[in-house]
Each structure stands twice: as structure tokens, then as C-alpha cells.
Length: 197
Ligand code: GRF
Image 1: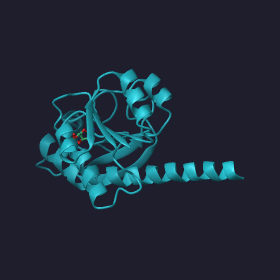
Image 2: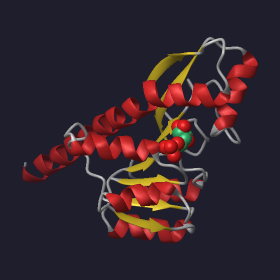
Image 3: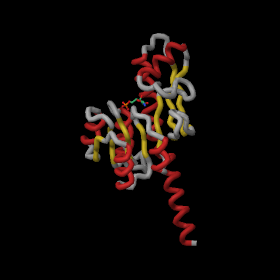
Image 4: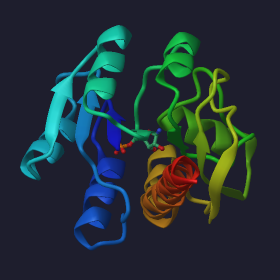
């Protein structure tokens, strides 16, 4: 799989750690791509010897992913919205992690700390994280996994963000990759068997 990032890359780190301890199998992180040259996530990839690139152009991105024969694309804190054209042309599963319980506090403009500000403003007592397939509607694709996290009375956007990352995001994203990775391998195996028959 390839991982798209824009910032700190703690979710990427969770994937790297899962791969190291064997719990990301059958998935393998082949490539990390950022739209932001200053993303610390690039450093995390380089530290692990994973190929890391900066790419801001969708046509180039598509070519790189096809050339590298990537089977699954993971958006881990990628702050750009992929166009419908890219999604249609890529034709492989794309998954994203969002730091709320979709359909709450999601959609265009609802990213990073804004998500947690909105949750606190609304006064919800439970928030969480969602991993979902990416389609042309921002945060609108089929849900793969969700995990609830308690909101504490003293929470600030920063403390809530941290708890959601620790209790939900860093566990959920590797688990979702494994689910989708196994589906991809199952589909490839069935296709091969059909060819033999
Ligand atoms: C995470 O909260 C993720 O859910 C959201 O952006 C944040 C990225 O954090 N999409 P990091 O770059 O993985 O540390």
C-alpha cells in the first residue's frame, strides 16, 4: 500500500509500528507521499527506510501509484481532497481516517483540530474515529471501522484530539488496512482460480 500524508504522521507511525510487529500483514507500506515538503511524516518514513516522495500534482500521483503497482491507498492525515477524476481513474481501494464518529463533524472544511472544536462546541459526550472508503463525497464513503471515545468535561480540542488518536485512530487504521488487504488478496486469488478453471 501507499500512504498519503500532510503533517506529523502519527497515524503513519502507527502503521509502521504495526508492520514491524507483524500485525499489519498482509499489508506492506511501499511508499509514503506528501503534498507538503515540510511534513514530519516524510522523516518518519525515511527513518524506516521507506521510499518517501513529495507530490502535489494528481496526474503525477496517479502515474507514481500505477508505476509502483500499489493495490491500496491510505490517507493518513492527508489534507487535500482527492478529485473525482483521480478516484475514478485509480480504480483501487482508497481508505481514510477521520477523527470523529461519521456522520458527525465531518465533510468539507472539517479536519484537524476543527473537528474536535465542533464536537466540544456541540457538547457531545462521546466522539471517536472512523475509517472509511473514499468516494467523491468528502468523508462520505462506506464505513469500515469505528471506535467511540469518551469526551471529558475538562477537554480542550487538543486533549480530545490526543485521546482520540491514542484510544481509537492508532488502533483502528492498521486494523482497517488488514481487513481491506485481506479482501484484496481474496479477490486476486478468486480471479486467479477463475482463470485456471
Ligand atoms: C488525524 O487526526 C487524522 O484522523 C486526521 O488528521 C490527523 C492527522 O494526524 N485525518 P497525523 O498526521 O497522523 O499525526
